[in-house]
Image (cartoon, rainbow, N blue to C red):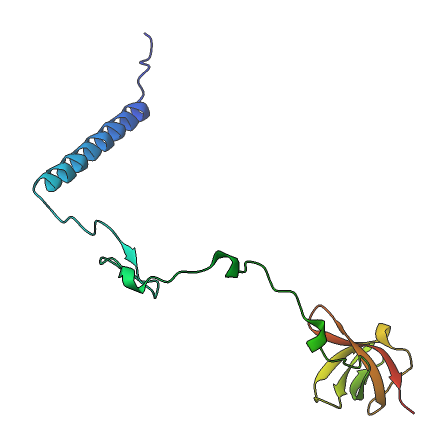
Length: 153
């Protein structure tokens, strides 16, 4: 005898699909009936006031401002180089810590007392702790690094 093509799993899936369709139809009928009974209408229109909040009252046309289209700037304004003062890139400082076996240390800037990382690859002269040095700053992965470090005589 041949086995039936309709397996238990297929029949269960078909039952679920039909039940889902019936539930959807019931929900649709319930919403339709609620609409006919005059349920909650909600806000028909939403307006945005001057502070950016949604309201149901329209804004006052007397408070409307006229804005010139040419006055709107979308891009970043050009930089005025005349306002930038010339800053000496060479700074002075003192070596607060340097480990020659590991090849790194820290230099404290004498102007702003900031601590900057210094690697052996950025050295011109050999340095040790408490040396007075001149250096330049360069952006590194974790912040500003002291490079081109020289001892001050």
